[in-house]
Image (cartoon, rainbow, N blue to C red; front, side, top):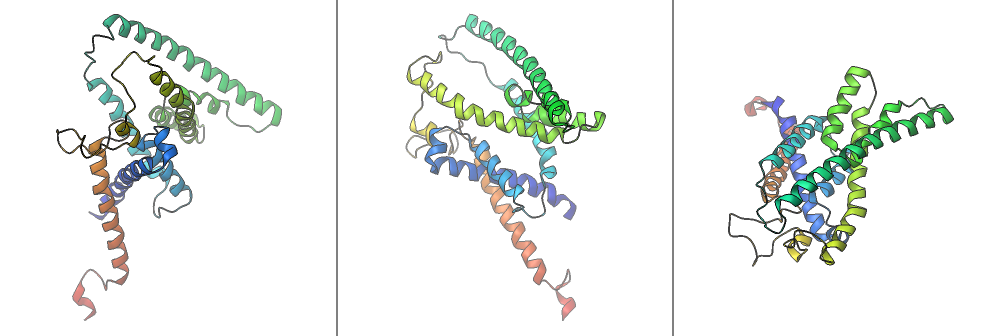
Length: 269
């Protein structure tokens, strides 16, 4: 059973980072006003802790498989989400919007890849650095695709084409894309909502949305909804609580093993 603990603890650390991210989002005014999701806050916190080696026994590679599978599940969940029934949006608007989004996504994907490829190739020509120009093409994961695709394609490029650190570079681009989205995209979205320019008039930025947690008097009656889904799903919040308890217990057991005489308590008598 001991061999199963690294994977379970890695999952618990991820869930614990979500919990810490939700608390920071709620407490730090800048994060609250920028509407930064708890997953981003927790992910950045985990990145810093791993970079400083403050999570002993774990490296970034220990979380690669979990990241890949959970991003796959997140995209699967989009297909399982119920469709909107608001008459104000209209079927024609959804069709036109979908076509427009598809065209922009395709054009953006191609342009980013070409521009990134040419920029790295030009940099190599000027400096002689010898960086693979295909790493520049991974910039598409910053503003069109995402971390899940960066792991998938980056891993394939590393294994099949020998492009070193492709997955890590793709994840860096994806993280920068998230930062740009919240530094530029969120303020623009807030401005449009404040001006009433959004098509879905039911969307509004109330205190529950900003804080990331429901007020005690305004919690939905279905189950125990603690955190606002715009910041962190309530199920993930409860899993985070369990994960923190699991990690603390694991650390306590590791500490006690140092003082334990061995697997047989009576052996030292």
